[in-house]
Image 1 (cartoon, rainbow, N blue to C red):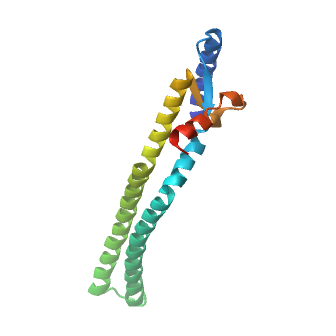
Image 2: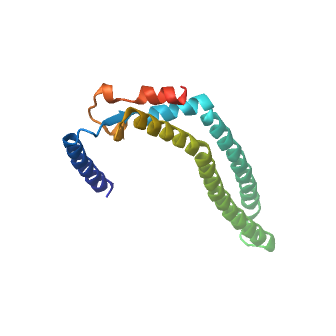
Image 3: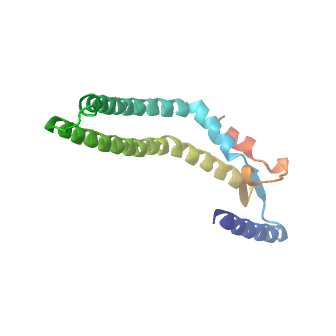
Length: 170
C-alpha cells in the first residue's frame, strides 16, 4: 500500500515537474532536511535531555519489575513445593496476578509518556527547520523544495541546505 502511494505521489510530482519545465516561472530546489534537524538537535542537546528522561522512566520500570520479582520468588518459595494449596498461596497468587497487570499498565503508561516527551522535544525543532526552509525558498524564488533524501540525482546549484543552515545560525 505504501509503495502504491509513493508511486502515485511520484507520478503526480513528475507531471508537476513537466508542467513546471514548460512554465519558466517555476524553480525547484532541494534541501537535506534531516541533516539540518540533526545539527539543531546536537546544538540544543535535545538527545541528551531525551536520554535522561528515558533513563528516569527506566528506573521506574526497574522498581516495578523488582517488586514483581520479589513477589514471584515469594510465591515460588511458599507454594510450588506443596501438594496442597492453602489460603496464603491463593492470596499470594492473586497478588501476583494484580502485580503483573500493574506492570503491563505501567509499561503502557511509560510508552505513552515517552512518546509525548519525544514530540514535546523534537516537534519544535522540525517546525523551526521547516520555517527556515520556507523563508529561504521564498527569498530565493523557489516554487518547490524537495527533501534531498528522495532524489536520485540533483544539481548541487539547487541545494539550499547551506542557505538554510545560515538562516538557522548553524
